[in-house]
Amino acid sequence: MLSTYLIILTTTTLLWSATAKPSPRQTCVVSSYGDVTKSDVPAIKRAFKTCGNGGIIRFTNGITYSINDFLSIEGCKGCEVQLDGTLKQSDNITHWQTQYVTHPFQNSRLSIVIQGAKDMLLHSPSGKGLIDGNAQAWWDTYVSLPHTNSSLLRPILLTIANSTHVTLDGIKMINSPMWFNFIVASSYINFLDTTIQAKSTSDAIIANTDGFECVWFVCALWVASADCEKGDDCVSFKPNSTNIIVENAICGGSHGVSVGSLAQYPGVYDIVENIYVHNVSFIDRSDGTHTQNGVRLKTWPGGQYGYGKVHNITYDDIKISGVDKPIVVDTCYMNTASYCSEHPSLVNMTEVYIRNVSGESSGANGNSVASLICSPSATCELHLADIQLTVPSGGDPIFNCTNVNADVGIPCTP
Ligand SMILES: *[C@@H]1O[C@H](CO)[C@@H](O)[C@H](O)[C@H]1NC(C)=O
Ligand SMILES: *[C@@H]1O[C@H](CO)[C@@H](O)[C@H](O)[C@H]1NC(C)=O
Ligand SMILES: *[C@@H]1O[C@H](CO)[C@@H](O)[C@H](O)[C@H]1NC(C)=O
Ligand SMILES: *[C@@H]1O[C@H](CO)[C@@H](O)[C@H](O)[C@H]1NC(C)=O
Ligand SMILES: *[C@@H]1O[C@H](CO)[C@@H](O)[C@H](O)[C@H]1NC(C)=O
Ligand SMILES: *[C@@H]1O[C@H](CO)[C@@H](O)[C@H](O)[C@H]1NC(C)=O
Ligand SMILES: *[C@@H]1O[C@H](CO)[C@@H](O)[C@H](O)[C@H]1NC(C)=O
Ligand SMILES: *[C@@H]1O[C@H](CO)[C@@H](O)[C@H](O)[C@H]1NC(C)=O
Ligand SMILES: *[C@@H]1O[C@H](CO)[C@@H](O)[C@H](O)[C@H]1NC(C)=O
Image (cartoon, rainbow, N blue to C red; front, side, top):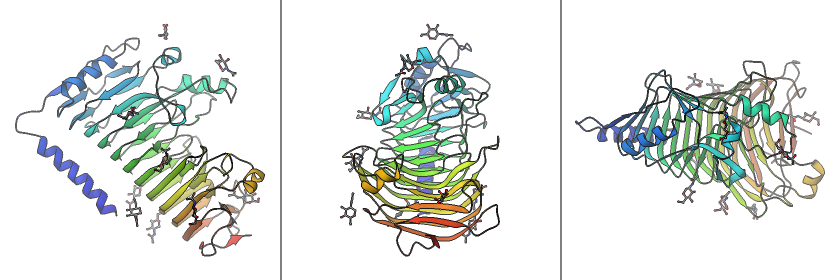
């Protein structure tokens, strides 16, 4: 399985060298005003227009490019982006209200969008490439609003849409107002050596800064060597995400590597299948914030919600350190137990493997290290093996289970 994906990468690399003809490729060095009040978006769009077809677009080391407006990067065919400078989003919230391009999934708002790219490499030859969401003002404003007030629609930092064979390599992303990466209607997307960090300098919480959101017919995504330090999910596989590998990642202070949440919308059939998560460590954030979950599958109940299928999901070689709930299967997401007992989840889960999970929980749930709550109205085939979790008290770890299959592979309570 792994080799398939490695072949994909090799093929892509060969393709680039094949297009590197003896004559030098057309190169556009993007200019910047060097003034935060002046948007560099027009200059960036010009560079892609001129050099997007097979050329090189270069962002110079030491230069900050002001992303003051919605930036749609279109028409990249076999282009190479050398990001050595910083793309910094303006934090003029008033102005961004006029800049949004919406996406129907969960009322998302988008900031930088790579649209319709084919064979694109976005890398940082100097290792200095940075995409800065500059989110402090957003987080501060968000917490000052009543929690139910959704009028503040925060932009997702980077969206890849309708694209195929896109590789990001060695890019660092910081402080997104919302999700960091949103991948939609795309295939063969690789994130290699990605660093993602969200740090609030005030008391404001870092809300919804998921690292990777994959939805809507994402096919073949490979996230390798990611280092995420942030709030919310480290990686999440949203409705209709398939064929995804996540490996060699470190998730600090996150809500886990999550399937879902699925089946939120009535009448909609959500699918997540063929996911391989391998060699992922869950650790505290550097400010000491514990990681809430490690492995997590979450689905909404039945009743007024939707239904779906989770199939062929494997988590292998997972390292836990100070995690509140190392393993969670929650089929009653965002609802009460009484609602869920009346309207159990209608998402079938088959061939879910969780293997070789080791380390110590935070102790936040006493000796309990797992919560596997399946639906009585759906198939729930979970296979756990080689689970070597310990708890700070030194006692025996407890695995909470409800409605799980008899051969789940762990000693369940009750
Ligand atoms: C923020 O954007 C608004 C609306 O575009 C503009 O009137 C205002 O001058 C901007 N503020 C700053 C500090 O640039
Ligand atoms: C939400 O917050 C905005 C901005 O502060 C305010 O104008 C609006 O009235 C609030 N809406 C609700 C429903 O509280
Ligand atoms: C992707 O392409 C479809 C059809 O061409 C278009 O409707 C949609 O807006 C595009 N997606 C995004 C996020 O731009
Ligand atoms: C596992 O991931 C870590 C963190 O990215 C990396 O340092 C290590 O080399 C990986 N292990 C293997 C066997 O690939
Ligand atoms: C997911 O795929 C199913 C089956 O093709 C489709 O009915 C559903 O609308 C899709 N969900 C989303 C969120 O696009
Ligand atoms: C299960 O998913 C993995 C990861 O995407 C894939 O490599 C494998 O072929 C899938 N297995 C089946 C039987 O489809
Ligand atoms: C779940 O599986 C059962 C048994 O195979 C099947 O009858 C049911 O239609 C499936 N439900 C969904 C939502 O796919
Ligand atoms: C189990 O996972 C750890 C990483 O957490 C890895 O070092 C070890 O080799 C794995 N064991 C097996 C038998 O694969
Ligand atoms: C397991 O159940 C106990 C008792 O209800 C609860 O206190 C604990 O938090 C649960 N564990 C997890 C990981 O949710």
